[in-house]
Amino acid sequence: MRDRMAPIVPASIKFDHDTPVSDKYSDAYFMPGQGLAETRVVFIEANRLAERFRALDDDEYFVIGETGFGTGLNCLLAARCFAEHAPAEARLHLVSAELHPLQSSDLTRALDQWPELARWSQPLRRAWPAPTPGYHRLGLADNIELTLMFGEAAECWAGSRIDVDAWFLDGFAPARNPAMWSESLFSALAARSRPGCTAATFTAAGQVRRGLDQVGFEVHRVEGFGRKRHRLIAQWPGQAKPRRLRRGHVLIAGTGLAGATTARAFAQRGWQVRVTDPAGIANGASGNRLGVIHTTPSAHLTAQNRFYQLGLCHALRWFDRLGFPRSDREGNLNGVLHFPPDERARVKFSHAMESGAWPPSLLHHNDDGGFLIPGGTIAPRAWCEFLLDHPGIVVTDQAIECFQPGARVQTRLDDGSHPEVDFLVICTAHAARTLPGLDWLPLKTSRGQVSYCRATTESQHWPQAICHAGYLTPAVDGLHSFGATFDHHSDRPVVSPEDDRINLAQLEQHLPDHYRALGGRNIELVDSRAGLRCHSRDTLPLVGALPNPRRNPHEIEPGVGLNLAHGSRAITHTPLCADLIADLASDLPLPADPGLVDALAPERFILRKRRRDPEWMP
Image (cartoon, rainbow, N blue to C red; front, side):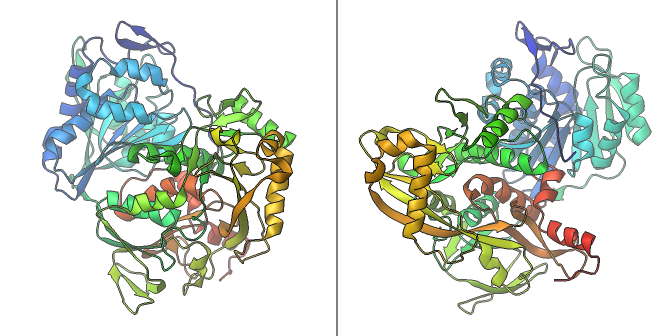
């Protein structure tokens, strides 16, 4: 997929009784009155899914690829078939492209007619993403995940690194939408098909039959469904072999936001997880009373800006699925109000709205003259404790001193023990550079201080977090959090009275009404907290396999991953990064498109250095 993507235009449809019909293509999403039966015959039975699901072992997984998601009916029936026939510990990954996703209300109306699919359609409706380009990972069940690729099908699949066991070749009929059934799509299907992969489609059009045949599929025309005389089934050459997902013992260094989310992601995939941190849970940069889940919108859909956008949406799906926060003391996900601090920032917000890159469900004007985006506040330590409270996770208080990569990773902890694990993830922020062999990591620190003031009668009812040049949170336990300072020249997390004055001055300048309501010059400061943020040189985190800078940077160190450098937005970014590193270690399809994965990969800095100086060595 391209680094800079175009905004997504939602589908425009009308309903003919209960059947959605596309205004653009003048074609129905499924056969009127026979949607379930059509999908069962044309896609589920034609791909022999029940038989293949029954043949899986507990530690195996299956991937279905689709060229047009539509209402999701095909994927929902596949999920039901998997739940009925597959072993309980096997996993199903559904990966579907969609150029024009349905509006949420249209999706709900389309799916309401099938209450028998509610077990899987309810999670889909609840987590239905905003129409933004890239990958969107949704959980339909504990062992069934759906990755929606919003974009043109041929481009999504050509840029994908996901290999497929069975194809649902769905979409509007070739006569109505010939552009989708292109040579580039068929080439992408061939490139992403595993040996023995099957394919099925409702159409028997010559364009489709020839396209599949020319790229190497063995194609058969069979009896059609309903009024259609024929349809196609196909198979890629070779013997199908199930894939085993990788599981085992993982050691995670660090119990802050990166470490806790990573631990939970591994545990949910069936790993036995040990998390170790001598400072205790979330006592570093993740230890503030409240954190704000937010991002800054941009009209330019580069990989970096898409990470900020998709990371926010992914985090909100995590919170919703896990049922956190559980009380106002743990946070409130009721949106974040942005008051841009200057005209340049205000123009940037406006351009993001006008471009279509940020649809109204993600960004709109507020009555007070600000901009409202999804998000809210979370108590970081409570969130980390919640994530680590899982039967597959053990938390200890040792520090990792060194490690040796390999098929089995050798480690040494400061208590003299030498645990041997299948995977190691380092989530210790700037402290990672103290480990032998990691002094080359391009990490920077900035000191920040947040101030806490007493709520007033007026302020204690403020409902939402507010971002300006800094931020102001609603009151929790009678205290507001506000700040925070940025000091790139200090590496000592020591509280400074001067930083409290800076935070107060910033509050007075950008939120003068709130400043006065809090008491103005008589604001009662109660406490302060200083910490060190960890950044990379390009401000994106380092997430992925550990490279060896003294060899080919594409040659990774086996069994070791990084999840570092989340700066001031770790609470927003770490859920997506945790899923990325856990899927990478488990040999599962990744939750982000290749452009975004490469933008986060730690070897990017080595590659940049080598481009400027081919002889560079750290």
